[in-house]
Amino acid sequence: MSHILIVEDEAIIRTALRKLLERHRYKVSEAGSVREATTKYRLNDFDLIISDLRLPGAPGTDLLKLAGDVPVLIMTSYASLRSAVDSMRMGAADYIAKPFDHDEMIATVRRVIGKAEQSRAQAPAAREQGRTIAGMIGDSPVMRDLYSRIHKVAPTDATVLVHGETGTGKELVARAIHEESRRAGKPLISVNCAAIPETLIEAELFGHEKGAFTGAQTAREGLVAAADGGTLFLDEIGELPLEAQARLLRVLQEGEVRPIGAVESRKVDVRLVAATHRNLRQLAAERKFREDLYYRINVVQMTLAPLRERGKDVLAIAEHLLEKFCAKVERPTLKLSPEAVQAVTTYTWPGNVRELENAIQRAVILTDDDSREIDYNTLDIDLDLVPIEEADPERLPRSRHTDPREDLSLEDYFARFVIEHQDTMSETELAKKLGVSRKCLWERRQKLGIPRKKSRRAATAEA
Image (cartoon, rainbow, N blue to C red; front, top):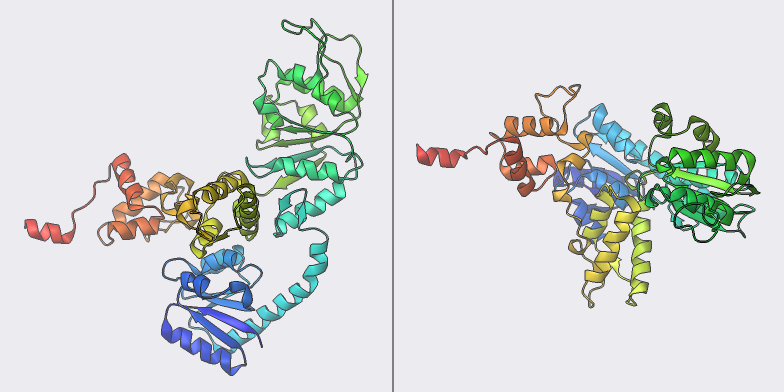
């Protein structure tokens, strides 16, 4: 018998849906909010979660990340194409509009549960091919695609260009390619091009002879030569000076390197993996990056998705890091409280895995020794204080007077929304709709010159 969880704050709808499902031989549990659902039940114990989109505290779409592999069917009173598309894009198995037709609801439930059972039956074989590789954790579709591409490319000697935001783990991709290649027994040399001064980077990469320049008191082998037979990983290759780019191009084209001040070149066998968060094609068009080098390194492209696009991987990575840091400080493994799980999975993580790692390490250090759970506060992730500049404009509330096609900046939108709604909404309600704290709302008012209007009660008293 399939077990279904209903998350709905309206008791009448919840009861009617429970009776309907029980008549069709489903086992049903209930909750009135996301918080109640996560504190009262283990979401992985259910075969399906049916949730209203609009719930007190947190939207039903928060369950999409919290539910693991359990499918979530979203109900919405706002039967608009936008809410349906947004829910499906975030990972909902399906959606249904309220008031729902009983036959349509049962047919949808059967279809979603049947599809989930089929996926679970096929999952073990797919997972055996590797949910983790070279320290990368995740089973989201974007990571599966990345693993597949690594498996295909690694055995070759093709040059690889990895794109990704800062903190996404581009070096792990290079390590995975190296470990699955025939060069695995040879060195993997990693170089951050942005971390070496421009005046030293050529000598660091290609080496130099004694007396080649002031301070060159001895001959020194470069990092390219040190990677002979193995893999050279150049992180932030877009920061490489043009002179060094010319030398690197010769290494790739001729397979040889000539140290600064040397007369003769030496042969090297190096596989290059490069990474960047910049648009190299645009840099090449602006003559800030050699076009011939761009085409030389852009043989195979890989894109590492930011953490906010990896869905349920965020929680898996957080739990792995939690276990790692607990072991490091020699304390029993902690677990994330329901509130902490919700914070971790709903925050956008602009610093990606690096920021998540810092938050988990900080939480382990600050959590009391007698506690068994990581508390929300120790993560130091205050969702209410995320600056409005970092908020996703698509998730901000839309003014009823605003044409969605208008190209408004976030500050213009903020000002317009406050001015149009401050007569009918309290400061707390305005802040909640805008996704910021009351303090942030006050600071924005000061910055944009939007005075706070007096309440009706104060105005009446003055009159």
